[in-house]
Image 1 (cartoon, one colour):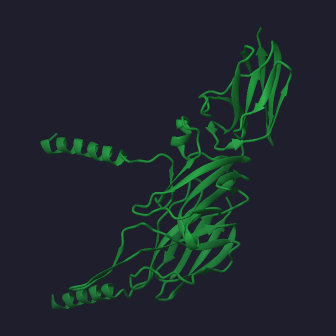
Image 2 (cartoon, chains in turn orange, brown):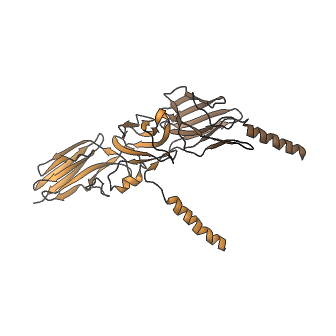
Image 3 (spheres, rainbow over the protein chains, first blue to last red):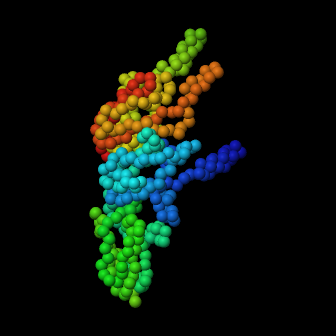
Length: 224
Length: 141
């Protein structure tokens, strides 16, 4: 190995570091002029870093933040437009998975000029899992087991996430939540797609969520 | 030697004068499992864009003189199959003239074609130096 080739290695490494600096979280638009992130809980770093790098679940809602990143350009007022509203619908800045397929979402500036676009995939979930949320709304890394034990007064927030194979799909699924049994009570957490559960008295209860295609339950045992 | 110099000068002049064809350059790609492709045959002047339904493609356009296309008045025959829109491109500016004492740069012209549903239609691109027809082929997923 010559001296010149030895110099080449750190030069390439330095270039790699420089290229890495300034990289943004979220998904860069096809034209490289925007960054789109899911509107995540503050400490849900997986959600914040992943951007839109997973399919959106059919039936789920995904609030998004779009930033125009073109150099020297103050972002104009943007309008979002879906290429196929039967795949992705746009509802007040939220994306709604309507049916499996592809759909580009255009970010339109004044006069309908395309500032950038991202192409989303919508997948039909093949299962759902329940996740405990922390105080800021971030989901724990692992899903809840079929049964958990609580003491009276314990409470937690639970959310449902959709999967297709090993991929956790994007978006918040909403459905019909119900609680069977008197040992616990269920409260509206104020966050779409989640509920708060509080243990009241010793006994058992069952939390059930029914989406359009799935039913998932969590057994609660409240100990004395 | 003298003859080859004259030939070279002639080719260079023709290139500078922009006597060629309009140039379409795709600027975006398709997601995995989808298609966003542009084809052209310079002999027949046949041009086509193939997209999976729901997918968009951005294409940079220069007219036959090498200037950015005007795009104003470009239209899609069947907007139920595909749509066309002008796009903003924060790309480097395009050198369109370089003389002894003058240089001229212009903003690049980019348009976006969006595949709406499976089918075929035709896009007319107004370059500012002649109109160009592009076959649009939208394919089901």
